[in-house]
Length: 411
Image (tube, rainbow, N blue to C red; front, top):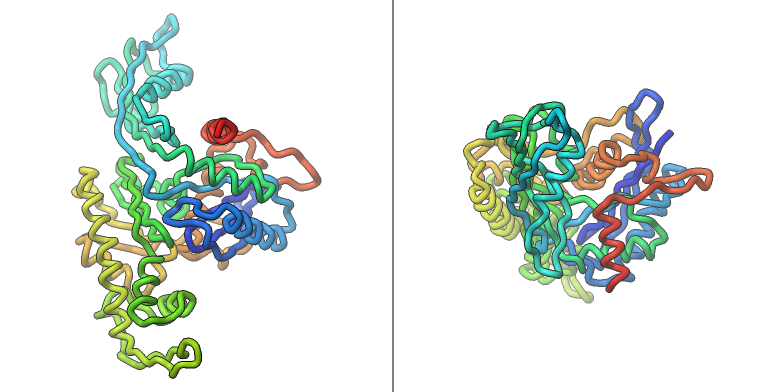
């Protein structure tokens, strides 16, 4: 069985998911590992050793469950340093018969990368939007078509060299190889969106611990991406500051009793919290807790609404919004998002697996890690590069990751 591992290094948690494919091509979840993380801030490494230890703990748990010795991983990258924009390129179609080949497309994609970037930024992904052959637009798969001139409109996603290099460094220190590095909202879309939703138009909103990631799809193509530097940790901080309690208490309070929308609170019963440092217990009501949570969640959705409008596709999203990530687990979040965004909202849960630890990953918090696995299954030349058994050698790294390694070696 071929194996692949997705590693989601988040602000509040690190998740590792091991999956394998059988002879029929069915995908099984073999192991899941999770550990707390306090070495990241808004998607960027702030403490190398803490992040490395969190990665090691999550990987050890995933190895224990799966019985697979993990050598390499597909890792996600996010953070408010991520930027995206549109670009265009043009090439002549080579060959005596002027028929488009994959080599022509590769040359065209390389031409779209001929842009001026600051020295501290590098391209992570180049995603074709459409191809234009001799003035005929709306072409999405030009291989085999005839023409003289081919143009492309692409969506380019860039990130800081230092941010990518530090993630690479943490994974390397955990004795792992980076098989590929993928933008997290793109990865999450593989886990919770289907092709029909991407065709009619849909926005994916992944509310994590440190960042909220947005990806807009239409006609099965990603059209816009954005990373918002406000997410679930800010909600926890608000509860902690208002109530004067410990961070762990605030997180449990949010998770167990929190509501993102005051009208969704079923009753106003009291919640009793132990006092800090021998002080008397604290008693609050559920409506008051919701009144602390709702303004911050509203802010997240209001910024997301502005980003969706800025994308130019707000009127093309017939599928509405799919909400995923750990922040989607706060009760009432979908109702609040629907109210603020003014369009249908549903919670996105990873799906599409045939067996294994299905219940463990049917949770919005695992959307990115599961999506990284899907990315590996669809795009890795050697599907066994995620993990190896019996001392097999891991396969080659992705193009971007090889570049990251080069930048890291030069630092």
